[in-house]
Length: 168
Image 1: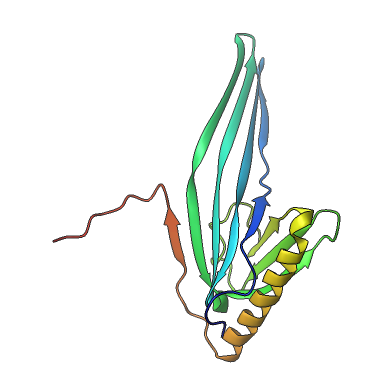
Image 2: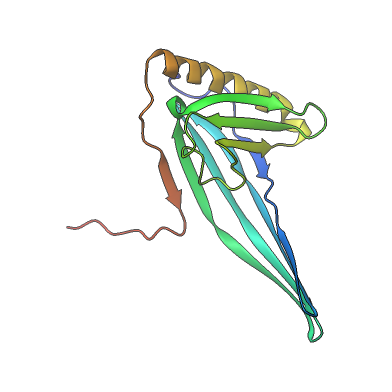
């Protein structure tokens, strides 16, 4: 069980999400996405925060339209018991932290999630931070598994989720 303040710091990351390109008659439409965020170990949970935008470029006979849409900020607080493993991958080229869940739903809300795994791409200069966070997470995951914890709830927070005021 990981207790108290976390040993590693917050790790900034990017998520790589595929865009789309389509040709419709004389129009070409391209949509791309960009996401960035932070990973933070908080006690017995991993906090994943991200935000981003979608960019749409429409080129046609009538002109060019380039629009950018800010996407809502999202937060997912995942109990370590819901994670299977964390790995530092890529070395100098394509450095990333791979988070794998015990069940497919645990990380499903994170853009770019595939088969229960999310790749968090970090800057080369943050490698020591990524290695420290991976070690802390691995210890916490092992402790949660040894304690037999598994059914803990995931918390999802979003800027797009309406807040209902408490009833007096």
